[in-house]
Image 1 (cartoon, rainbow, N blue to C red):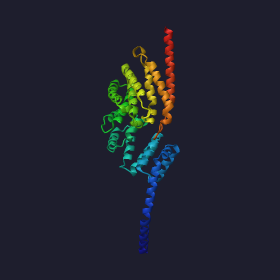
Image 2: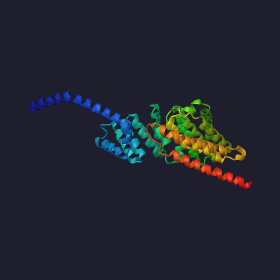
Image 3: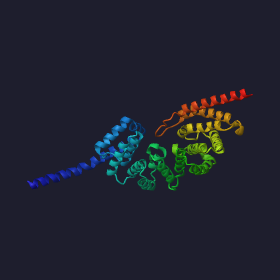
Image 4: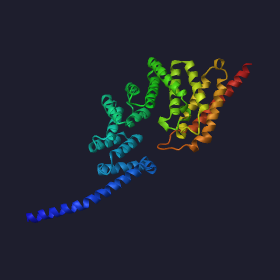
Length: 358
C-alpha cells in the first residue's frame, strides 16, 4: 500500500514537471500583457476612474497581490492617494511590503506615508534610499501634492529645506522645493527666511532669464524651464508683497512681461504652456499694483499683454496641447478671461476718474 502511494506521488510529480513550465509561461505572458494594458493610455483612464480603481484594489485584495507586481501596486497606491483614500493606500503599502520587502516601489510608498505622517527621521532614511535608486516619486508627491505633506507647517519647511540642499536632487526639483517653502513663509510670516528665499530664487530667476532654452523648452510639465521660471517669479512676487518690496514686485512684472513676449509657442511644450497660463496671467496683471506715476504706462501695457496672452490661450493652447498623463484640473482659459475682464474694468474706471479730476 505504501509502495503504491509512493508510485502515485512520483507519477504526480512527473506530471507536474511536464505541465508546470507551460502553465507558468502562460501566466507570465498573461501578467506581462496585463502590465502593458495597465500602463497604456486606456489603462490609465480605467485605473483612474472610481470603478476601475475599485476593481483593481478588489482584485489585489482577493489575490493578495499574487498576480500583480510591485510597480503596479504603486500605481494603485498612487490612485488611492489621488482619491483621498489614505487608509486604503496604507493597506496597499503594507501588503506590498510583505510581498516585495526590498522593492524600490515599496520604499517609495513607505516614504510617502512617513512624510504625510510627519515621521521625518524615518522619512529621510527612506528618501535616501529612493534617491540612491534615482526614484523621485516620493519627492514629487511631497513637492506637488499638498495632501502628502506633513500637517505641521514647520515639518513641511524642514522637508523642503532638506530637499533644496540635496545635490543628488536635480536643480529643477531643488528649485521647486524653494518655491514650496516660499509659499509656506507666507503662512508662517517668517520675514527673515522670506528674504533669504528671495535672494536664493533671484539667482535662479536670472539664470533662467538669460537662457535661450527657457522660452522654447520642449520638456514636459515639471521639467519645463519656462514653467519653472513662471513658478519662481510667482513665488517671488508673493514674497515681495509680504515684504512690501515694490522694486522687487516691479522686477517680477518686467520679467514675466518679457517672457510672455519671448515665448516660442511652436517649440514650447503645449501642455506645460497651458498649465502655466494662469500663473503667467496673474503675473501680467501685477502691473495694476504698480504706481503709474513711477512706472509710466505700466497698466495699459499690462492690459495689452494680458489681452494678447488670453487670446493666444483661446486660439492655440487648448486644441494643440497633447497631454500624457493627468490633465490639468483647472479651467485656465476661463480664469484668464475673467482676469482680463476685471483688469479692463479697472483700467476704464481709472480713466474715468482721471478725466473727472481734470
